[in-house]
Image 1 (tube, rainbow, N blue to C red):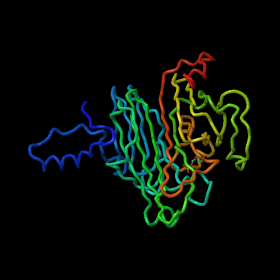
Image 2: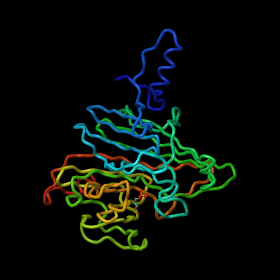
Image 3: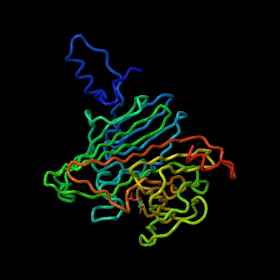
Image 4: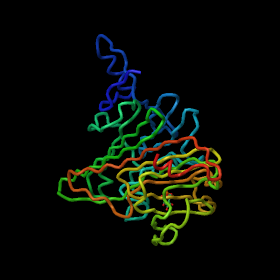
Amino acid sequence: MAAPPPSSPSPPPAAAAAATQQTQPQPQPQTPFYELVKGNSGLEKVLLRGTRGFSAEVYLYGAQVTSWKNDHAEELLFVSSKAIFKPPKAIRGGIPICFPQFGTHGNLEQHGFARNRLWTIDDNPPPLPVNPAIKSFVDLILRPSDEDLKIWPHSFEFRLRVALGPNGDLSLTSRIRNTNTDGRSFSYTFAYHTYFSVSDISEVRVEGLETMDYLDNLKGKERFTEQGDAIVFESEIDKVYLAAPSKIAIIDHEKKRTFVLTKEGLPDAVVWNPWDKKAKAMQDFGDGEYKHMLCVEPAAVEKPITLKPGEEWKGRLALSAVPSSYCSGQLDPLKVLQG
Ligand SMILES: O=P(O)(O)OC[C@H]1O[C@@H](O)[C@H](O)[C@@H](O)[C@@H]1O
């Protein structure tokens, strides 16, 4: 498949078609890195197609990844059957982006406004070093509107690259730049609010967060230290693990699948499952769906990130899904996390 270099992605098909009509002789259409199509409620979404059938989808609304499939066309992310694809509600599932505020750590609406704004495709992003084997990616950008500036009075450019690697790995790279012209710094908290699809929450364990300190959102953000072994799930959980390791594994015993999450620039990791009572209280979430999802969210929560004018921050999440034969202690979690 012939593709242009990663720093200059092809225009979307409509733009490519218009360009083709004006030039003589007609060039061969390039294979685009992505395709722009209509999704739910007429909202536009980007399709990324990798080798061997790997795929991903990203809505321009929220720059939200809503699908990531492996080479057996199995969905790896959870999206609620009751998700609402209509502004101003954020889409329930996939990978919402929490910016410029995580949760209630500030005066803005819960999780900030980036997840319910319309982003645009950035056809000419500043170069970003990438693996040359990556042929399928898209760059999106968000700048604040006049309305946004009233609620958060800072000028910024938020660039997100979503890329599908040759082995089906999914990566999200955020670059946030302070473009204030009045000399003011700004601070923000952030999360990739990743909803993983799991067979049954009672069959899942998370490796890498044991012995970590955490803030418990269910206990007024009080600080505790995680005890014992890997994390298993028997009730509601809403914890912000502090200074978590760069690799975390989510092991789904029943599916025999391990998600490996690698994070850069994001010290914390939030773990959330609403369990039965909160599930029933959410209008865009099915009553029993808490059994089939788990959020593990690379984040910067405890220490907000501060940028001076002209400064840029980068935060990256890479996800892979690997078969695992974990069954009563066969898998050495250290091999997953360090291997
Ligand atoms: O319903 P929302 O705004 O998408 O938030 C869902 C959950 O997101 C998690 O990240 C938070 O830690 C929880 O406290 C919150 O309930």
